[in-house]
Length: 178
Image (cartoon, rainbow, N blue to C red):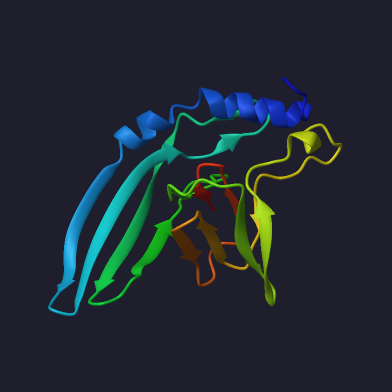
């Protein structure tokens, strides 16, 4: 197993010990209908996560104290539209807590497209094995101005964020992480 960086190795080991499934299992969810007529239907999904209140960076542990993080998503379907609209608000009351969203797209491939100022760039998915031991390793997440696109031979998906996504990564099996 290649040595990346001693401090990063500690973080990776720490992340491997954290029980994400328990966090998901303890999540409280509520779904309600906001609008429902012949042209538009909007659902509101509210999730409340009980997350560690802070991270102790000296010991690489999360606090035993918990705080509630509320995530509210309004999901809108419009008649004859090919898009599903999401408006998500996160009330992150935790300190030092990074929230990541993953979109499984089921589009396997070697590359993806991401928006940059005035252009789109084509990137390889994942991280180059050749660069893993560089003094400045290639980051998993790379910058974007808010649009990430994946495709295979016949289908694709574009994730468009008005102003909230500034970095992303895409795995070989098509999971967009932002």
